Image (tube, rainbow, N blue to C red; front, top):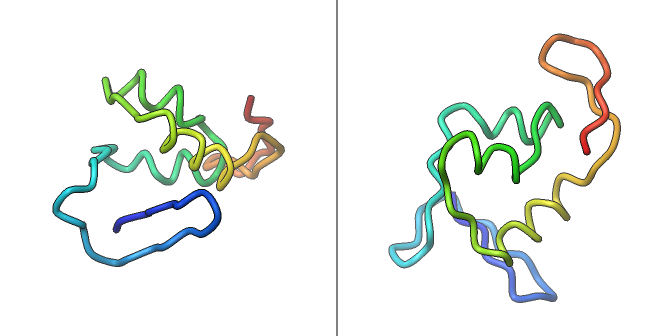
Length: 78
C-alpha cells in the first residue's frame, strides 16, 4: 500500500505508487502496529533508511504507549 501525507491530510491507497519510497519490512508491520517495536528500531534491524517525514508519520500513526504484544502481554513502547 501507499501512504501519502500532505501535512494536513493522509491518503491511503491499496496500490504502490511508482515514485513512492518503499520500506521492505518482512512481517515487521505487525511489530509496529502492536507496539512490539518502534519504527526507528525496525529501521535499524532491517537496515532501512526512512525519510524523516515518513518516520514522523509512522510515529503519529503508532504513538508511544501501552500495547498488547504478540505474546499476549502488555508492553510499553518507547
